Length: 235
Image (cartoon, rainbow, N blue to C red; front, side):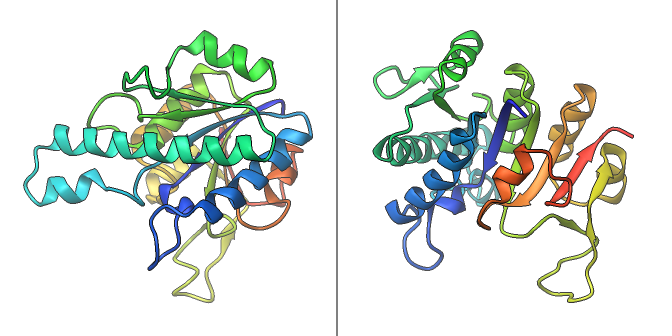
């Protein structure tokens, strides 16, 4: 692979039960990203904001859905800036682009500028989701991966792929090595939300679900190792 879009959850930047945004966790993520960048792969990142605020939770409590989602988008910008700082402190030139205009904080998302940054060897962190309510960061990741013509969308998780059932609760759970988009939608496997899966299917964007926190996993993925994680693509 020459260019990948990495989808990270906001929780990856925090420590459960302690702090929602931990500089130590951000630094650990930055080192993982640098390892991929070091082998010559262009890396873009879409980061969630669930460690700080979940729009769905506020919406369920009565907050207007559009407003709740806008709050969540702002949380992704905070995470994006934290990840950018962690990357730059270990020598990786990085740019943050946000779909929500805030010019004094980050660049606006401009597709051609983002691609140019990648071509110059910079990591680009996409924050602010799609800039619109009612869409998840999964959908934002699928959209940005398609816009920058990534070779794959890599979804980072805490497990080593997609299983037929929860591997934490069921020791006999079986990991899939390969799935089609239709498999994911029909079996409701929860890889990403249906809008994101459909967008990837329509644009033939492969998805790889892997354990981002296991050493060398991401490097193996970008080198095409099909033994790592679960690969979702067309038939």
